[in-house]
Length: 283
Image (cartoon, rainbow, N blue to C red; front, side):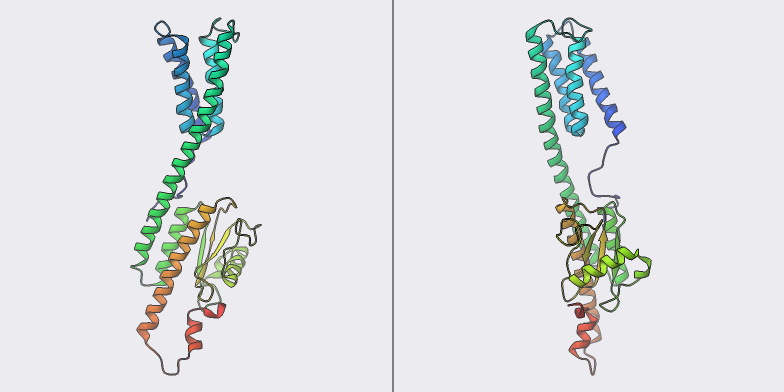
């Protein structure tokens, strides 16, 4: 299992992002001065464009856009005649600065899209590995408490939380429900009774601040989970939470079926009793 506190891509602190912007602009300006006697103004402009490309791939849109504007401003101030002013004496230089600004902003936008796709691909890969690892771990469990522990660990690793997970004792009441927040407990009970995911983006109770997911399908719900944070637009996150809960429900169902098989048919047992054991009275 993954031990990271969250599967989503790590967020860089704002202060560090602005330090990177300052460093890139300073490095580009220093290179421009070092090559001042050997290269043309166009080559110096390309150095700033390279800094903008790096910023666009590493930083968010706001920081990369600011870096693009600052790069054009620095090129104008330090290298475009008359130097050390913001004036532009040549119309061609003015057009070149405007074109460079447009190109820098376009590059920033495109690089941001590429970076987002890359981060999404990495996130999907981490989620797939987590599902595979959880399925492997669940195949070796022998008690419901172990399933709860693995499930809670998986939810905490995949989402910022706080996340909650609880099973049913008799097909109706949640085990240890008294330890849960009343709103969380009520949300879990409702998702179990409806055998459906509740919360933002589901079309059911969109005003909730979390996703409430049943463990199992209608007729054999064995528990519920509360996952936070929940965003209506985060379809991939909600689907991952559903996949985790599906694995937990399958493990619980398999474990309970093994117990029934081990006990064998009891004298006087009725289909109704077996139905109650599996929680089918929730249907």
